[in-house]
Image 1 (cartoon, one colour):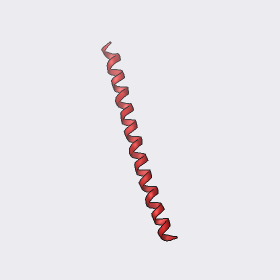
Image 2: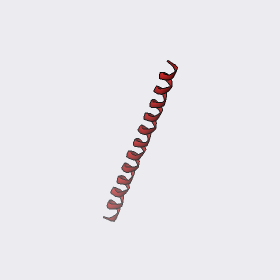
Image 3: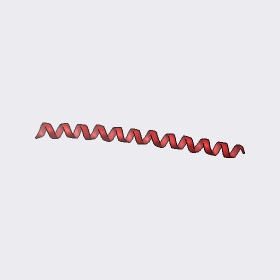
Image 4: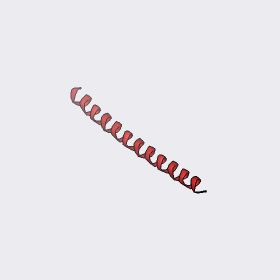
Length: 44
């Protein structure tokens, strides 16, 4: 029984980590796109 509990806890932790990584990735992509947009507007 304790094994099942620890398993579900591990899965929850993995899910949280994946969500955080996804958020960080989308943030960095957003920053990159924003800066690229600025560069294009300045150049054009």
